[in-house]
Length: 521
Image (cartoon, rainbow, N blue to C red; front, top):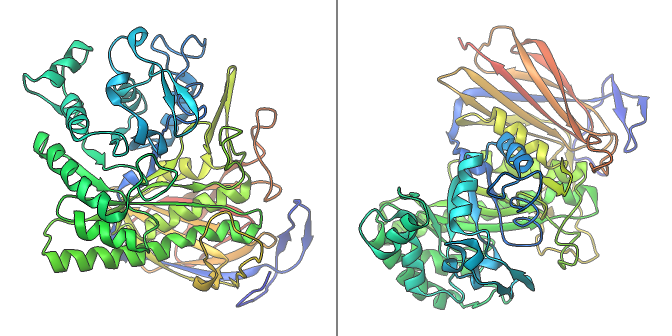
């Protein structure tokens, strides 16, 4: 571990295994200014994703015949856990699965639905969970539906019919078919994705960027003609390559969002917690591409980024274990870093969906008898409870870590060391102007040392009691399980006099969320 800056005063530190010894802590400064606004925060950055993969749907969201399920087959315990995350948006049905999925197989009486091969994940699909079940699940957890259409084996007619089935209000075949299936009113699905990862050879029906654009333009036309109110999402890649440039140039007139995907992860602690900063590079480049395209083509409507797949994922990549990773505290800090990055770029990122919600690289893990919450559940819950509507630009003065790229192969082709050195404290702030609420979220990424920071507030805030919630464990490698569900957990606390000049010690390998009602001068 190499520090770019180091300053040591009196305090204590913590080792990886939780042992403590007396040594001076690092001192830092965090400045929060209510006038330094980045932009509005769209709560849809806290969205989730559910794909027909492994046990995400069957045995996760949906388990017919289980004593834990309701009469329609939805797991009640999963609904309760998902509700606590307050997901504003749920993306479905894929993912790779969607490129071979024909949605009409999944409507009508379940006993009459065809059982199909799932070539994406080498499985069988019962089609017992389809469009109407998805819409019902969204209602149960309070999420807006986000549907991705099949541009692999799917047709223009099929995509048009899906929009008509979900949103049609007229006396037409597919609108009436929805009514026959028990839903009188349209679902009103606003967000529609134009295919998934169509650039990848793993995708059924993969295409070149030019081929994708030519087809997606036709899909966009018929879908928008069916319901002019919908908002379309173009299929992006990482955000810094030719695919994204070609797609944005070809689809800018049709889309309101451009999707990006990123998965990161490493057994190396520093690589793991810092890799999500690759989002920063992707957004700088994609933001510039969007600006260039809108300027050159005189596009009047805004185009935002939808990070509609993101997560830590590197252990279970081959699918033999159903992609059921067991997450550590270090992984939770990486997830928190993703969330921080989306807040810092809230002027560009308006949609994000963590992949996935249940069992598959997920924060919620089920068994036939119950569930437990992984370490990565907690950053999502903290943000769900405290995220404000406006993001603020912060100033942080603290030690930095100089990242050295490993020589061994990285499971994901993402390099971040050139963006360093990285501050040990990563902080974001949001506030709710109409309610007078401030959230300060701080990740202390130092795996050994506590960091004591002075918190400076540009506007005078009278002394108030601030609520403190700290996510931590005895070790960066700590995990939760059915046997030990609380190894990684959130502990509550308070700062009795939170005001300008207040100090707080952020423990090693922790995420701390400070929330306070304020009255500014």
